[in-house]
Image (tube, rainbow, N blue to C red; front, side, top):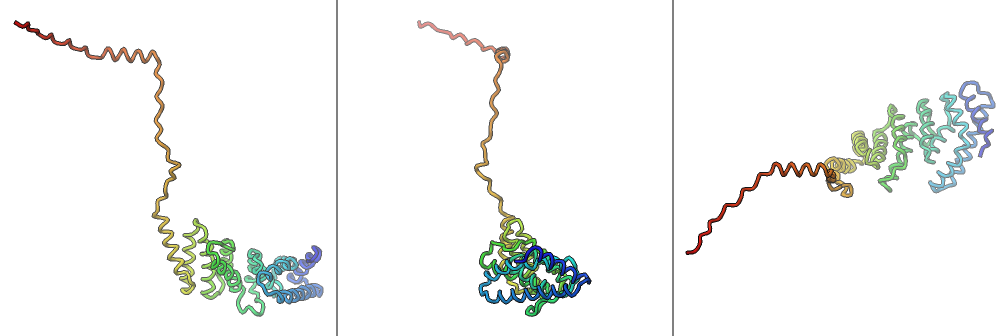
Length: 273
């Protein structure tokens, strides 16, 4: 672990190297950090498990932060094997936001990737970020491992870059799968999956599109059931109490308007003879 003073020194050396004011000491600083990178790479080669290797990279990355920040601040676009390698380590360690921050610089300045990556920086970023995302969805279809905003940022970052159709479709597939995990964003997920299959027909989302389309149509036609606990019987207003005086007046009025009864007709009784 580097001391804060050493990190600051490397930050300054990186900026000097980038702004044209570099000296022999600055160049030596780059050679030193490059040498450290080679040593760390050899250490990582001795680790077989990918998870353990990613954890080790997470431990090593803070030692390169000063150099990274200084290089990005200088914004010179000089070739830098340390910067591109650290970008890839951030992806492996799950630090996608930091990888994209470095990636923007790398893509804008069209820096070359390390030797074994026979791809541009844009294609490398899409491949290296999306492959683990899609692999995770195979194991757990409803669990997103990368925030969709980061995947959309990657899409925007690489939108104007040359890339194979299969790689572009892979990114849109990853975005679609991530959006599909939340009900509110499923319509948008369908759009991305349709874009993916239109870009590359063998991307493998045809069945996903059919199922998602059916699900959305069902949601549109179904009427949500009302919760019985919320149904209350109609409440009738309580009768108002009538004052005694008003009650007597109403009774008198009723008696005054009532029709008098007719007297019963006298019956003729005939005496028996």
